[in-house]
Image (cartoon, rainbow, N blue to C red; front, top):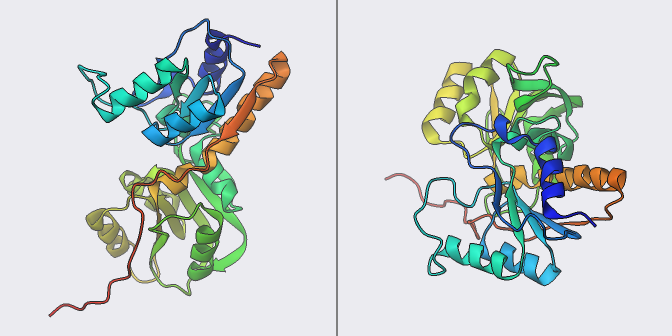
Length: 282
């Protein structure tokens, strides 16, 4: 059975912290380096219910995609919800480790898992990492379909394959247009529209598309141009958990650690219900 410091070395090898964006906060948040680790829980968000799930599971390590403290803080008081998470984890000797934009840029990374969930064939990164001579790492992925689908069919596939959320899949474009190539980006992706246009793909699937960037992208593309599919942020990143757990399983097997990895099925997307609009402008 490995100690935490040994597992952290393996995690830092899978998702090197130095490859995270400069604004990001990744790596070990809390945990005793000498604690023995046998059970690991993967989740998207380090929120109270996930901390409680880790306790119930008897885990010694919680690995999340989203940081707990993305910006600086002056307190971990248990009276704050983030402080409560820290206190819960430390009280039960559970470490917290974050792999965020370093996992986005990895090979395989978050967008590879998203593409895999939709049976899309990855041909390369959307925004290549300039430090990767192989040209495989980077943000987002450019993908091909094995056979063409209409935009409606692609949206239905996404709705069926990604975890269910209140938002579902929002679609912009000609619903009967034939889609052959797709760019994907797990998480917030409307900052990558320049790269999407340069890639010349038929459709772009991501999350958190804002009104103005999406509207401008559609206008820039013109009739029959770029189609957009906007999924819930949490749903586009959840597939990475199973991919990441499989990667750690492989490391554990090589070292003979016998780690037990679990993926949380708890939906921590903040939106809980959705009602279609029925009103019309006056």
